[in-house]
Length: 104
Ligand SMILES: [Zn+2]
Image (cartoon, rainbow, N blue to C red):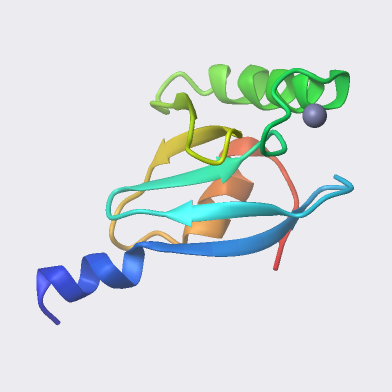
């Protein structure tokens, strides 16, 4: 497989359930990162979304070797980005690093 095809395969969205969160979220798989949509689109600071962000931020901060980035994307949601290696399963990586339950 060429590198371009590999990257295309990687560039996709997966709809998931996270823990007991009421609304489903998207996971975005990029060539060398995976991102989890943590807040609801357009809802940046309700108490519930704030608690989600806080929970994941504390968890990821305890794993000092994990580089992470928070970004607001075009959908208006706040996303958490983690580095993803070629051989890693994106959903499993999120489960392992963020200590969350993620199901399709
Ligand atoms: Zn919210």
